[in-house]
Figure 1: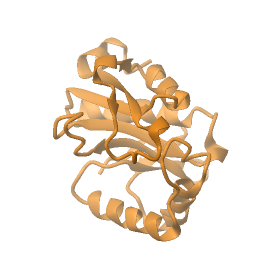
Figure 2: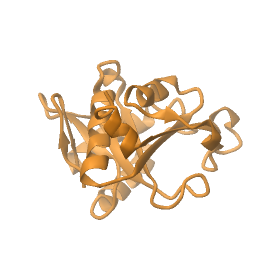
Figure 3: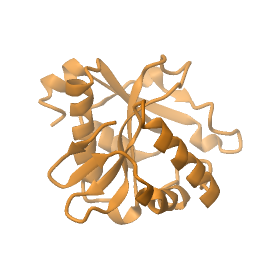
Figure 4: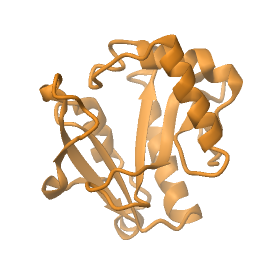
Length: 188
């Protein structure tokens, strides 16, 4: 499991003490504006248990805490998932989700840059992708700030989004290769 420290942040494995925060971010209408549902406590707890189990032997999003306070503010990091046919098995994505009180402070950009560095230097990845709902300009702006480039030919309608939410189906894809990351001096 990834453990990375930056000037202000620590990306670390999930711990039981993060359960309430995980529920908070997954039930907040503002945080989940680009998702078709808000998770109930039971749903958030079930997903949290999955992450606790998954992090034992697979790449998954890391808890993101403030170094100064030790408080978890959400997650950021790398995640391997099966999103075929849109991405081949083994594709690693970068993603994030924070409590609203942590928005606008540059935490996601700082954490995402560190996660890219970890993926390319420690894991030896050739490429990292990210994707978001077409209108999620906050997330796509982060993707651009960390050096990712839009790949319009890979945009897709996400099969996990129900037909009851057509405005959330279209997802845009961003990518960065290890070579591009190195040439951009680590995404800066």
